[in-house]
Length: 92
Image (cartoon, rainbow, N blue to C red; front, side, top):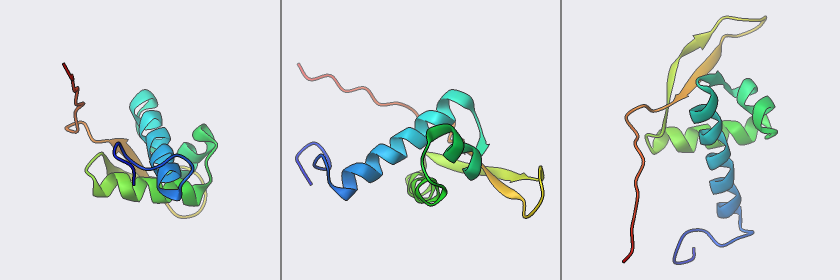
C-alpha cells in the first residue's frame, strides 16, 4: 500500500473505488437494496455485496430492514450510516 492509500491499479485500489461508488450512491439517493445499487452504479451484484460488507464493517453503512417488493426472498435494504460524518483535513 502506498503512503496515501492503495496503489493505482491494484485490487485494493479497485475495492476502494467500488466502496466509494456504493457509498456515494447511498448518500446521494438514499437507502436501497443490493440489486438496486448494482443497477444504479453499473457494478455487479457480488462486487456491490463485497463493498457493502466492507463499508458495514467500517461503520459507514448499515442495514435498515428488508424489502418485500417483488417475487422471491426479501432483499436487505442498506443506508449510509447517518452518524458517520465527514472529516476535513487542512495541511498548512
